[in-house]
Image (cartoon, rainbow, N blue to C red; front, side, top):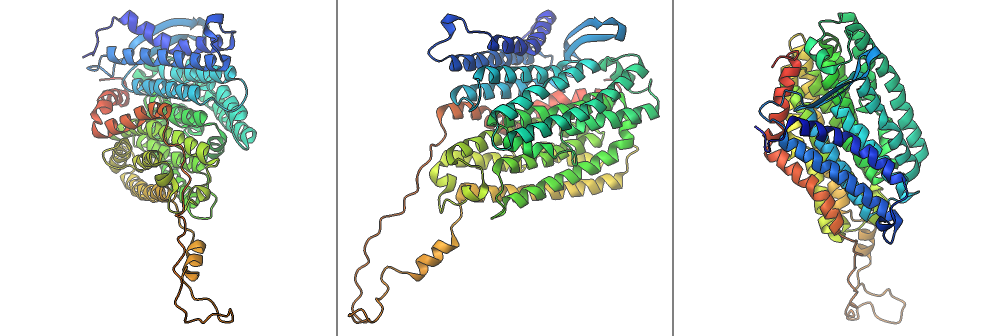
Length: 562
């Protein structure tokens, strides 16, 4: 069933347009604007260009989704297959199925919302021309990662996003931005070198780099030892990008230093590239190797869940001088741990849960970073002790709608039933309860119990953040001072008046006024509303997403057989 009947050739064009248009738009952003399009402000003109290009890509992605055959989501659709390097049998092979389509839509949506946000609130830093071009190159690389079906093209697209994100952090970031950018690029590049060796090993040993053919072969053309080496090499590169504990340490620094738009794209889009690689490449192409490493992957995943939650609790406590953006970054380590746990179960339930959690994390954490950036802009800091120091007011008193939306995003992140964060975690834990054949059931049930404990820790730190940032904290010193110096206290003796004299009426004191902050602006509401609405929709109607992913996952795990 398709919403709109679109011919295969038009579908091919739409997918190619979605991948290539941002790249062409990035080149156009660096060229001088035509006289009629400059407007009064050239900087605003180039930012408007970014909105136009990302908006066109989003519209094309929506049209592509409406023309997608929802009755056969396991079948690759809108495919293009053109020979590129015949000597290596490398082909320009594009296509989408029920696994890649949601990630394609998420990327197009988040990039458009970031471009729209930047238009109304331009980034503080160098030329907006370079900023717009970098965002568009990053979008093109991310979309290509989810659309290509050739191992070498996957690697090129995977690497294409590194340089734009490096410069977004290094040029438009905050404090310690250069150190954070270098840490980001070094970790990811070193992981990518190892991953390339694994991809070459698979391609040369199997005789093809075509991901569809490799998935259909289901590892039958590769020996177990080759599969184990390939999973180890490729898994390291993907784990760095995910990021998996203990390869995560670049993430908090990058998020803390990155501009708001950079944090949204990093959390909402780039982290998904790593987990997508596990599902698209390792599960179907090297199943024996994955089965060997699955218990270790699950163990690292649950350690990451607990570690990320404990780090967030440490940052959230009073006096820790924790940064709100840094806390959200550590929460991503925990949330992506659930995604990796679901993949490690190698079951349809667990993998579907992982894919659902991927999309939910992109929506919710993208919204959280937008809100954290807005709070930092208003207060001038993201320090939790400073944000909580507004006695009796904080966000609920100063900017109530902003505070309410932050509370909504926080409870969505902790997995409240009825919101998107719930289903991915629940399905992941169900998958761990009954893992794939050949995996230790007792070990995975232990991992399930640890993961369930991690959900309690997540609820704890998120509720602490809501209480402190949204409600504020009373200072015990001010309360003690007011309690020991009442307005009608008798005057001490020796002043010429009797201590028993009738006390004077207390002088009326002006009520303490709390300085108001700008509440949610119109452009912010337009930017954030789609994320909040989709969080509710996915939570109330999970079948919209699971109906796409489940048939594709079933086919993937069955070795290409529907």
